[in-house]
Length: 333
Image 1 (cartoon, rainbow, N blue to C red):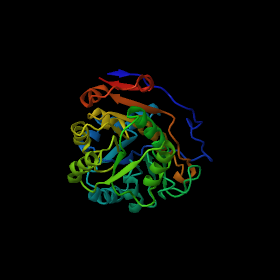
Image 2: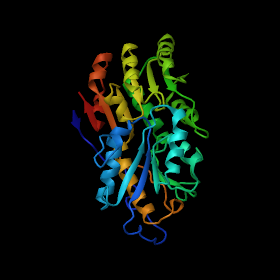
Image 3: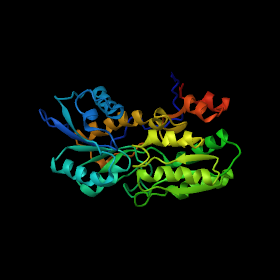
Image 4: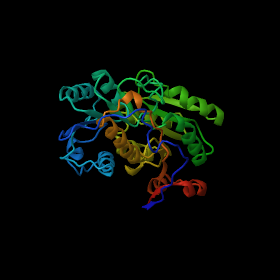
């Protein structure tokens, strides 16, 4: 596996502007940081050296800021268990524990928003925080939520361009997705660049893991040329199965994030998730020093990654265009 990371673009948000000075965290107080994630086992998120890469990146960021686990802070992780029905209860449990701040990922932010309007919440990546009604604006989030956006919706056009480059001719692109959170604009954000690129989309909605086989079967029957797999509460925990179905169906597939490709998927393009979790530590640190979330602008990512799995390409009988290989940040062989 070759690793060729690159910083793409620049955004002057490396150091968050703080509108006013704030008192430091009370001396001797061990802060409690709640963590609510998508599908990670709690055991993999626990302790000062968690096995999970995302939570490990958060703790690494806190260490870089001089905070020592067990001395300055401890974590209270909750794993999501891939079951959306559990998230409200887990969010409520973190609120009952009266943690000082909660770090949440992606679609779990909604469960946290409904659980508390007072405990600060740091987004470790949210696809469309303004459109979903999580915050008022990127510059002035208001309320108790701030953090980092993944710019996921803004990347839809790039993903479709790459998919067209992979499969320049063929049938429609099958979009496998699930019902979204209130306010999410997923369908319209995908359709707009698709029209500009002259691409036809086939929308296939899944509501549980049992729908995956049927979705790929429908894509095959419709003679789809490729598949665009949305990052959801269903596809992420079942990403290995999704990748297997894509290969079995002989359908090149574009995914939202790297873990899908590491599980056997073909290609992904996204903000660097580990970098987002590491940057979330900056927000946690400032909040623990007394800065209000409403006063911390939401940061957008500056680091993106294109990941390609050549083993999956070989299984599909697909040749990756050299133009894509040259742009790849990581190639899995």
